[in-house]
Image 1 (cartoon, rainbow, N blue to C red):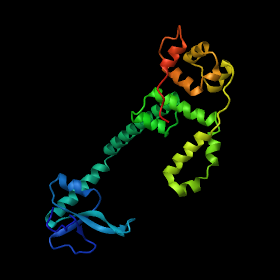
Image 2 (image 1 turned 120 degrees about the vertical axis):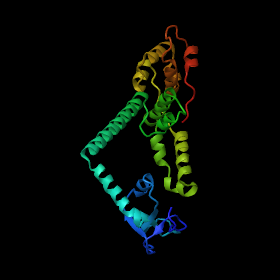
Image 3 (image 1 turned 135 degrees about the vertical axis):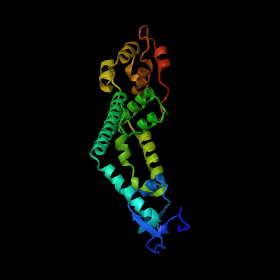
Image 4 (image 1 turned 90 degrees about the vertical axis):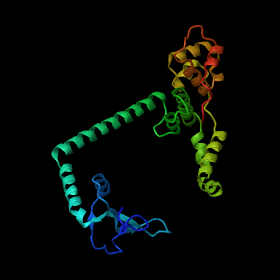
Length: 262
């Protein structure tokens, strides 16, 4: 750090004249270059731009560095050499290949996330996906949560109950986040579920149950109207990978995935 630095560790060329023996070198990303080659410098404030903070109406913009006259020529040579390397066709081609590889990797990752969401049944960007990514739940829990969400929207009047609530009034009383939470809770309490089918064929068809586990459960359980679809889904997921011969109600009940978070 040069002695001309102010208390903020820079030199403001917009308000102060450079002392004799110092030169302003303008450009971007000059500080790492100067450090790499052992050139002493001070960041240069070359402009003041508007700030969104009322306390500080403007903020400094670092547009270069101040170096000694003796180091200025060397610094300019280093900048020119850097630009030559950047514009080298081989360097450009290598950067393009690296960027392509990064993009391909990102695309593969997104595809994997899309496939996982489709397999488990949740929507991309949902809380369920965030919980799964964060390790709060596993895929079995996520599948039950996703079904529970789908059931609420497709087989109850939850959405209609939600729309009935006066959002603006509630928000003015309790604030944005609390209003959203209260709206969800009120809609859940008031929602009416569609009638559960009376036969297993209708039940399985209506809720999309077609796995070997679901068919085995339907062959054992007596009355579909006594089997709530969310409970049925939790048991279906819990039975996956287990032996399905000699299945009993007790085995079905014990296999149920724990109550998922909502």
